Length: 431
Ligand SMILES: NC(=O)N[C@@H](CC(=O)O)C(=O)O
Ligand SMILES: [Zn+2]
Image (cartoon, rainbow, N blue to C red; front, side, top):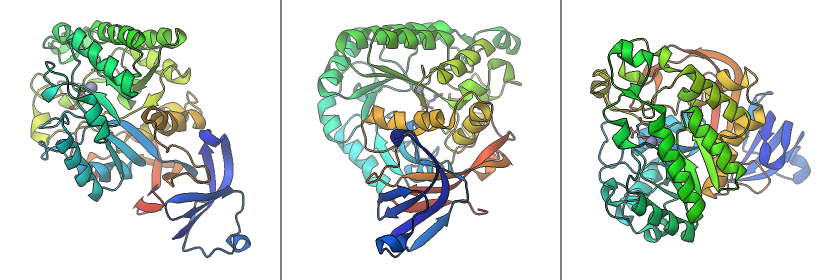
């Protein structure tokens, strides 16, 4: 199968290519990237031509932080529906977090995820839990889980509060060379908080979560990464303090990367209109000052990754008050357009930086051969109309989760095609 993508504006930081190019794909691989490819010159018969007409062509996005809810919470999302949402959002690879039921803490459950993923539309890589049942008491056999296909280890949903246990996990991770994805939250300090501590929480009469809840564990985890030599990746950074710690750690040569999510550079706690659980996620929406710090850290490449933390829940669960509803919002189908609108169109990020943070850097962190459009690389590609304006409508999501604070938001940037291993897995109906 030979596919030719013609006249795309290619942005590929890995090869330092940016400009008008054609891309020739043979089966699952990129064969050639050149201006004005004439297949006849290579005596090649093209089966499919995609006329990109100047639209953006980028390496498929890679999401390091997705909750697929399977096994155990299929009423919220399944691996199949999550993968549909991913393809629609331009993601060709997603990482599944381990807080399922049972947790991804044993090879059999990992195998179950891989089996389900076969039916999915995109590449799905599981992240294994650090402790048995994510209960924070007993370490899993990390080597065995990595051998079974886990691309990273994480206790996401919570922190490993037992410092000695986490230290041992980091030592083991360092030995094996697998990344540790850290959800930084001091549970005792967070207490029963449901939103950012501050005026808005007071106004709504809701218990708050201070920045220190995140910053204290961020500092602890960074220090442990320094001592153990583990590769640490900070999940969903939301505070000014965490970006400061990340910056310092990088300056000291600690092996560390950091991610944030679109909601943390778009919304602050001031934007929460009322007690509405579509604005409830962990960590919470912070102050406008934190939002500015997150944007600056992205601009200055202190934050390396934009992930979604796609966390679907059922309508019934999210119709509850903020006190009762579970933490989390969906993000796979809105991440690109929000990032494009809020950061690229405003000049905060360049095209190159967007691709680095949504594709190349995640690939590097996972140590996988993706995130680029070089000759010989896997043909995971997304084609985007940067000028298409539309209104986010949760009812159009492929995801089973409709829990988003972005319903009704006007955005730019529509995914036209998502190509996984040379095959078109999603095509926008009106393109
Ligand atoms: N982020 C959230 O608010 N929720 C996540 C857990 C997590 O990523 O910490 C979930 O699993 O629902
Ligand atoms: Zn988390």
